[in-house]
Image (cartoon, rainbow over the protein chains, first blue to last red):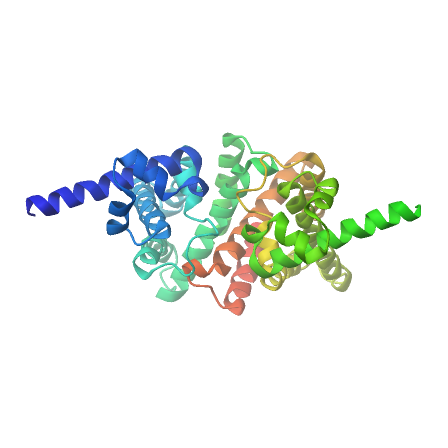
Length: 194
Length: 194
């Protein structure tokens, strides 16, 4: 990489860092180009040379979040290799909840209604990679499951756990204590795998 | 009710009707007092004599939506009295999906992140009433379940189905065909009840 490319890359990262901090602290609804410019020390014009618009910037923040979520699930897999597949999936569901609790605003941003519809292919793939990982485990549990059926079930499983975590942590309905929510996930996971 | 109260009540309803139409057509993100004033033929000032602010107006639109959702579930119960409880709950989950599909924007508005946190007690009760109905059915299936445990499980069940419907219908991940989604709900429901 030339000096110029490196400087460009660094600036792009600075912009993303600033945007990520704003989303993490205040939520995606508070993300705007002007504040990102101020926080990153870049001009508004520079930001638009790196990202098409606010939605594009938000998508790249979300891509980082999904990468961190995937890494958190990797950790679980690495530390839980002795256990059975069902136990591993259960631990991953717990890790999903921990991630959501520990990264509430950036995690919420993944599912915000104002995201562009549909997502661009590259970012949709970030989600689908996660579903395929879960599908692989489901196929270990149910070896006769065809690929597309396993993918569909993985999506359903992910969506169910996501719904439980998402409504359980929302202040609007009275946030459930983390331990209660985790116990519910532990209770329901084996049922979701049969 | 006096003539004046009646006129007041009628105006309040006109305002709510207009707000509901805007949310139904464009989504809650497009709700603003100025457009509601224009569509209802009321002045901005009149709207503020009936509703504290935009959030208050949105909450009352949501309360109407939840009342219609409850009525849709009532219908299922009335038409499915012969069936067993598990079948009835399964039919209710299907009705939930149909309601979401047929009322996408007003249904989405129920779970929007920008709603006031926490919800006022009266509106939270609208949700909790729904959970208690499901809890009652779960107690028929599991007579030894304590009340609070049944309520928690009802909330988990609702949240799981909500997650499946919500991620399944979101354009961003590629909307699943309605029949696929319904088949997944039918497949998973019995597991969620054990």
